[in-house]
Structures are given as C-alpha cells and as structure tokens.
Image (cartoon, rainbow, N blue to C red; front, side, top):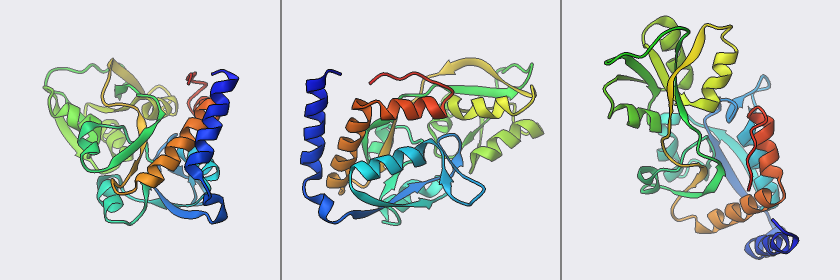
Length: 244
C-alpha cells in the first residue's frame, strides 16, 4: 500500500472514530477461551492468544474500553443477541447462515482450511465416525457426507474422542489441529485432503450495532494497512505470511 493510500486510511479511521476520544465506550468482547492459538485461558486465568492481542489492539485504535468475557461455544451466538456481551471474537468463520442472525465485520484472519486428524497411520473409510464441535462449520459439512457425525460441546472433547477410539477422526480448523499434532509425540496425524469450508474469520456483532461495526472495521483497516495484523498472524501461526 503506497503512502497516499495509508494517509487516506488514517483519515478514514479518524472520521469514523470522530469525537469518541472524549469518552471511551465500554465493549464486552465475547470469546470461547478454548481454541488455541486463536483464544485460550492462560495459567493466570486470563483470556490469551491471537484474538486477545488483536482485540486489545482494535480496542486501543477505536478508543473502546474493552473487557473480556468467556462463553461456551454452543451458546455463543444466542448470548450475543441477548446482550450478555457485545462482540464475538472466537475464531468464528463468516457464513451466510450465521449472517442471517448476527452481523460481521470484515475478516481479520483469512479462510483456514479444515483438516481431518486421526491416529497416526489410520485411514478414513466409508462410514467412518468423525467428531466435530457442535455448531461449527465442520459439523455442518460432515452432515452432508457419508461419514457418521458425532458432535461434542468443546474442541478438547473432539480430540479425546479420537485418542480414546470413540471416533475414527476429528474435523476442525487446520490451525487448531496443527498444535495438537505437534504435542502428540507422533500419536496423531492429518489424514486425507484439506477441506475448504466457510469464509474468513470476522468479529460478530448484533445487527443493531452498526456504529460499533464501523469502528471495528476502521480499526481492522488500520491494522492491515500498517502491517500490525500480518505480524500478529505470523507470531501466533508459525510464521504464516499474509499480505493485505
């Protein structure tokens, strides 16, 4: 991006934020806290990970006083719409189905392929039992395949189903499963080809919160323009290169 484009981006950000600097708006950032490296709860009991860093930077740029709230995945959208928090920043892919219920900012993380993970040396046969987390794009995809879908409330439970033999494989985001495989000492491995499901990852907001969406979009534009977002992606996802 050339200097004139960057100056224009900065001007647009200032225009959206307006006089908000006078008094910061408190925004409750809802996340799952169980999907590393996107989000997790660290040893101090605090939300941590890629999305914590992205969210804090967005809040600073948009002059928002943000507090972090954790919520189980299967009720994360209903609790946004009912007002228990103001955003969802939880590795949530933008899909047409979700967009009918809530609104999304632009993506802050590119589309991530889904992968099957099984015990090392295993192969997926017709009718295999495949685990997925409830209410994910992977669960929706598996329902239309020849595999037998078994759903679990948390990502940890889907992995445990494979290691215990309850499921033949799990289907989840490659970025999540890669860390599980690395820590398995060769017990687990990817199997089969990557699957493209859904769009990029965006921040979910209530459809009535257009002003908040605009502020977050302007801040995301700013982070893309100055390289901050690409640097955070590289930091948390093994040097992954993303160009904006």
